[in-house]
Length: 116
Length: 114
Figure 1 (cartoon, rainbow over the protein chains, first blue to last red):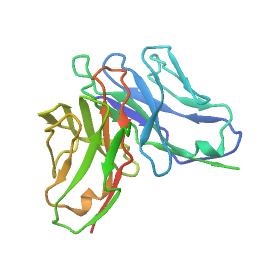
Figure 2 (cartoon, rainbow over the protein chains, first blue to last red):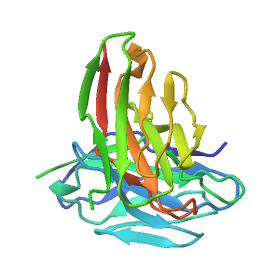
Figure 3 (tube, each protein chain N blue to C red):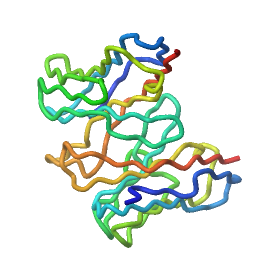
Figure 4 (cartoon, rainbow over the protein chains, first blue to last red):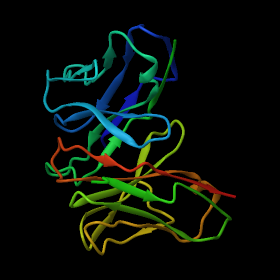
């Protein structure tokens, strides 16, 4: 079945450092890909998405490019802030006959802590 | 517009007790889901619904029941709580089943089973 693998965490960085969180997937066809973020004490919210190969999703300074040749969707940010401290999840939709049925398959999540 | 709401925020149960986790959304979304979040395992799908009166099992359904009598509400029932059900539970909804559609999540319920 479909699956998502994220880099082992947690990740600890100083403010203004460069961030990469790796995500690779196994899926039938070419699904949409998502990054969700969970700030402390809150539910998940969509950070960015890409719907087809070579698409780049971007939001709040974060970027991720859909690479079908490497089945990857790595998350990057050039200069992290303390406020970026959160848990980041890579995800892809359930895909049965071209519909997600409102379901997502998640990676294990990566905890990011940014120090001043 | 409150989005997706969940109650309670925290709950402690004893083994064998039953309870219902409430989830409601005011966005008129057809699709709703329940996930549990455990350390190092991401979120795993428990049950989902594609509309009022229609539910189906996800990846980890054992020990949980759901029903969907209205579009707005999707409660999750624990029949006989076990320590293995200690987790954080999230409810989510989406407007459609499109492969690029955004899921909207509630704030979660942290459940401890002693």
